[in-house]
Length: 472
Ligand code: GDP
Ligand code: IMO
Ligand code: MG
Image (cartoon, rainbow, N blue to C red; front, top):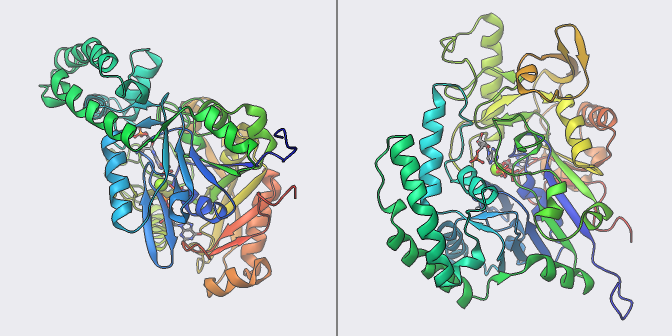
């Protein structure tokens, strides 16, 4: 509360409950109607968040999804920022008639061209050992590595040319040596101190001219005290979390809700006081490698062992391949950032129980209920069987997870519908079998449903409980 007794603004956190691409962008867009400020707290341009509004589609990598509604966007200190992609994304949005008001944390770390190159170099080195994560190649991992190694360069450093020069002179020769001597790769401009200095000093100048850099914690606290509503926009998802995900097939940040505090400079009590909504896809998708017990079929270059099996399919898996293709096509399951076909599988409750605990989820937003329409049977993995042991949640070891056999419950499918009309009429208009499905999921995970997505459009979300109006 401020001195005049005005109540502080509410804070709502949106996180991915599975493996990314759950439809966080759409949910953030829907709820940013009530928000004043939308904040990313981790990750970088590895994210691809889609907002569909009046038949226009926006695919956002760094700019928070609230920009489509003209809300202030903030990239918190927990983010890693490629100034080049940031500025070109801003320019592209301006060309489309938006005028994003964006603030960037001075404490956020900068992705340099050598980070992107090293990302690719190390992925290739890991490939033969089946340790590659299938990264987006955006330099995310190498940048977080430098942050933890205390040799990173922050947005604030771009504003001080002497500091920038000194940091580059320290770090770039190390990176060059790493690329050349350890990985045996020739290096070019991406590892050239003078070139990097000129380009990045220029980006710093542009950020300064546009008044974009802030101390995010202090800025957000002032906004909150002025009664502004704040929405935290998580990127990636729980199983991609570097601590709580299936390491090493993860990203290098913490997408889970605890990071909303660390990655913005507001405290955990502030995050916990507000709603924390886990976005769930009604089935699963994954871009990249790593185990996926409920996977249907497989995708070359991503599904472990796919090539070793010759992409082979017995009668059963042939059906699964067909089903996977149907779901992939119906759901448009191709990567927003890389265009790769996404792997697909049945909904996995042990994964959701894990996500609910790690992020203290107060609500679920279940998307893509329309995508599963017209299937005869819909399956849900209700627990795992690991060599005779029943597991209700994901085991901590990735190797154990890869050996988990899903134990399924089957649901009768639901018919295709006029989803616009369903969304307009609300929950009761949802086909009965779809209601049985989502209610079962919510009961098993012990988290109520806040929203149900029945299409990509802004109006195609059924809202059962708006987290911003909850305590009014
Ligand atoms: P994000 O990374 O979590 O923001 O998700 P993406 O934008 O990468 O991927 C989600 C895709 O599904 C986008 O193309 C969305 O427009 C679309 N989408 C989101 N919710 C729904 C839904 O309920 N039904 C359908 N059919 N598509 C949806
Ligand atoms: P949004 O926010 C889905 C995956 C990559 C790879 C692993 C590590 O759109 O949900 P990285 O480039 O982060 O080092 O890659 O994480 N990945 C995502 N998968 N959605 C995302 O973001 C992702 N961001 C990273 O495919 O397996
Ligand atoms: Mg995405």
